[in-house]
Amino acid sequence: MNTKIYGTGSCVPEQVVTNDDLSKTLDTSDEWIRTRTGIERRHIAKGSETASMLAVKAARKALENAKMQPNEIEAILVATTSGDYTFPNTASIVQAELGAENAACFDISAACTGFIYAFSVANAYIMSGMYKKVLVIGAEVMSSLVDWTDRSVCVLFGDGAGAVVLGESETGRHITRLHSNGGKGQVLTAGGLKKEYIKMDGQEVFRFAVKKVPESIEEVLQETGVSREEIKYFILHQANVRIIEAVAKRLGLPMDKFPVNLREYGNTSAASIPILLDELNRGEKLQTGDKLILSGFGAGLSWGSTLIQW
Ligand code: ACO
Image (tube, rainbow, N blue to C red; front, side, top):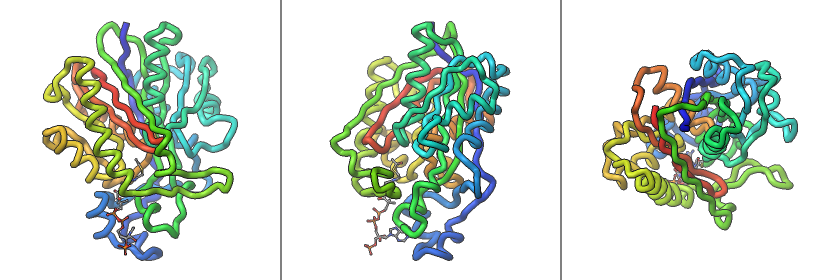
């Protein structure tokens, strides 16, 4: 028994905020943001738009792409740190909206690595025979977690959701390796008793990412005996183009193996990997049998990679 992605979907808010828009209210510039991060625009939720609303739209598209009905889904896992409520969880709200009455529902909190963690749980459920079809979603309204007067943080983030339907398959391949280092947790925080906005030691996060992501990719390659050249795309969490370039360089691989869409969306945390995967799928960039590595990293600190076969 193995697992396979049967469908993907994504959704971002309609409202676009450009770097130039931000420079009207903040002491920043398009040039600073673009050269330091690669980000040009981000989509930001308007008014009452929530993570669950984005998640539902992404999930509907994924189900349609998979040619499956909501009542076939046995579990819904939402990776998020910006869900609608403390409880109920966002997955339950998605369940109700979709009419996926047969699904068990819960959220997973692992920040920007959240989608990889959720995906690994879904995979384990299917491999164990407990469930056959699982909806895995990354959905975030990061704009609710940033202080819009803090130029060092607010320019980096955007809102959105991405979803995949994972199911059992005779072929395919899937191996995930996850890591955490709680001792470094204070490098990147939000919330707490004082309900604070995101606080980040940007340079420390940068150093962590460019060291741990290549190590984590090497780890899954070694465990599977697959060479880095056999991987069609490395789909990394979209935090910063300079992190992605540094990872490509450390692995000795060309940037065309590392698709990038953060110019348009900024950092959408747990949603960034499934949004990018959906763009590749709908852009007909993926063929059956393609080997892909998905790699996440972020608060916790946490990181992890998964090798899948399309
Ligand atoms: N516009 C203009 N100037 C700014 C801005 C801004 N938006 N933000 C900070 N600055 C200023 C600072 O105040 C500082 O000014 P000073 O020299 O007068 O003190 C100067 O720019 C340099 O600031 P640094 O923080 O040293 O800038 P750095 O080169 O490290 O770039 C950045 C900051 C882009 C955040 C970088 O550290 C980085 O990419 N870190 C990775 C972290 C990341 O991507 N986090 C995303 C969330 S976490 C995740 O997804 C894993």
